[in-house]
Amino acid sequence: MRLVLVKTVFIACLAWTLQGCETLDAFMSKDSSASKDEEYAGWDDKMFHEKAKEALDNKNYQKAVTLYEALESRYPFGDYAAQAQLNVAYAYYKNDDPEAGLAAADRFIKIHPRNPNVDYAYYLKGLINYNRGIGFIDRFLPTDSSQRDPGPAKDSYDNFQELIRRYPNSQYVADAKLRMIALRNNMAMYEVHVADFYMRRKAYVAAVNRANYIIKEYQRTPAVPFALQIMQDGYRQLGMDELAADAERIYTLNYPAGAPQANYKDEGAIQKVWDAMGLDK
Image 1 (cartoon, rainbow, N blue to C red):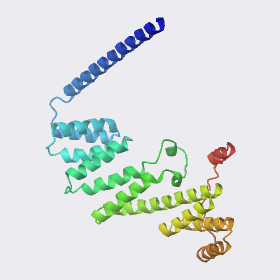
Image 2 (image 1 turned 60 degrees about the vertical axis):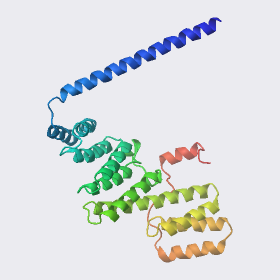
Image 3 (image 1 turned 180 degrees about the horizontal axis):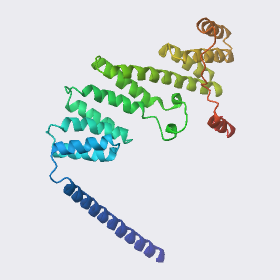
Image 4 (image 1 turned 90 degrees about the vertical axis):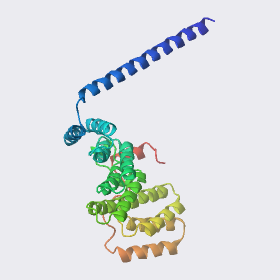
């Protein structure tokens, strides 16, 4: 009985505390909103635009987002509304909020399909996804980009491809094409890492199938010679010597000097620690 009473008192106190926190949060939110209204008193759409652009130029991206959103909400049909919708997408991107950046870019495309700057919205979507797989550690330590999750890379490739298809004369096409080459090479090398993983797991059929996929889908990429090497090893392990010889012959004809230098097996310090702990066995 005493335990039930203690629990009841505890729950009541907890509920009272949470209610107090919610009340405080609501008060703070209301107070913050009131202070912003006072700060923006007398501002027209031009003032919002200038201050937001100033924040953007000074790399104060959170402030830029706040000002652009305020501009759009207060002057939705003003002269700067469309530009604000595009700029806020960029501000979200620079503020490490890719989801909001993509949503803002998509919204701009939907509302302003004939805007002269709509090509930039498509380009920005590709740029956001291009940098989406880069984490905090990747920014400060050298890492192999081909070992990241290929999802954002595929999305970025599709974004740039759509930009080129819709706006072949856009000023952003040249950069998009260069990024697509890098993306395709990374996606191909990612498949090599997967095939190599299968080889180390002795899943030779899966490794050979993955290597075949690389050769079929990613021709003229640096991944092809490594795929051929994996095919040779995989077929030999499976006892298919004729197919292994075919792969070796194709490799020798196309790469008489050997494959380009690339360490797809990732024998760096992190991998050595991983292997020593037995986490991949």
